[in-house]
Image 1: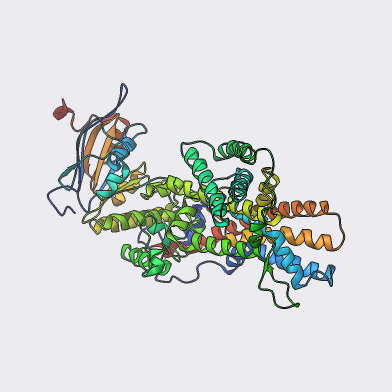
Image 2 (image 1 turned 120 degrees about the vertical axis):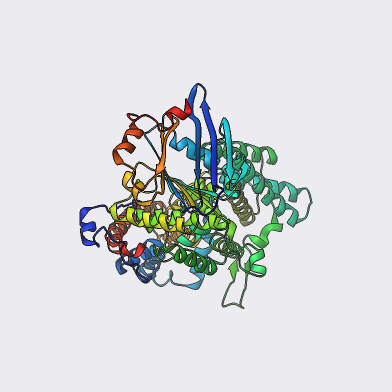
Length: 368
Length: 264
């Protein structure tokens, strides 16, 4: 963002008081931001919600009468669930200043660890705990290597490779099939109402819980706020007397746990633990994150937007499928949408900075 | 302007060697509570090194540092911070996407009372209120506390960075503030505002060291001017009535040191 705009032009001085006496202290604190800026900022922060709304309206007409149905909404939510979990992992990583590419490997290892524990006759909770624990360990390793001053992208590419190999080692080259114990968090539906409502699939609840807890954590708690601050300017946080490195590791751990959770949910869906780490996961997740306008420079972004990003991907592919359009057109659409959103954001950004520059000239006197 | 006999910060015989290079050569410098000392010198004169010694980022090769009469040795910037010394870096060290209140409170966030506080929930309202109060006390009004720093002008950011340090040192009985080129990136009017703020902070009893290239700034805010040349202190004089040509002469080295006879 190019707002370190220092309006030094002669015009601003001429328009202000003469240099001698300091300008009279003004006590007004009110609206010194022009309305147009507020609108633009709103569009930047909430634009994706508007976009999703427009998509839904468009599909509701275009794919009438099949699209705008409760059942279809649940289908979309369920389809978005996995992407959303991984997107949360990638998103939190990026917001805290690390791009964790090892997520597919983490997911594969978590699901294989869980599969191994379950096929050896242990309790379901133990399997899940072991899977999530694997995620924590992966996050710790990623984090502890990265804070030694290595590039997180390279480090996590390395761990991705190690992890996908390890997952195959754990599974002995095969898969762990028949994990029906996990059905309760896979295809099972809850809140069923007679015949009229078939219930909501388990992954939707998991996603809802993750995003609510994550959003509250990042915006309302001390550690969450510091985590975001580390993403924006780790050096500033360090100078404020905070152990910035610990928060970077924490970012990796959260990312790892979410990756593991995604792997477990995927395993539960198909009741089979598969050691194949699919890199496609990370790219779909990244698409959702980028669509949500999470800047890769870190420190910015919000989880609700990431969720909507994942939902948009699912909505597009669902709507096109209903119309009987080939699925590869869906990826073309999301790609085009992503590029469009980039252009949109650029336009908004420049508009905001221009207006702010103009506004800062007029708010000068209020500073003293 | 001096309020006590013992200086807030007193450095004696500071030496700093990098290999064969002598960056600082027996520097004596002190600053009293409520006093603004401007540290001048050409590039490479040792200003930044001296400031880093004061802020604890560098350990001097020799010499003593006294804070309010007590001898200290700083191993890290946090030691200096504990002693009530705050540095405002030239890059300001602000977290741009976060709002003013968070930036002012970073590292000492206020938690909510009760169970939510135990879970680490912050009290944004309270932080806003106290930030506003602190800024009022410093006599600055920048923008609403909820405004992200990235939406502030350069001058407003500088004010936020200064205010943050001022708030931090005010917890001490007499704080010490080190400013690195506070007006380097600012326009005329913004510079005036920052000057006024520096003066007000000094009037509240904070001892301030300003490193700058900006001679008008010195005359405007400084009580005393200290000039370094090639790692040596060549002048230490009251700002009021100091001859501009003499100062420039000391900075460039064309004028012999005030201390030549004493030092030899």
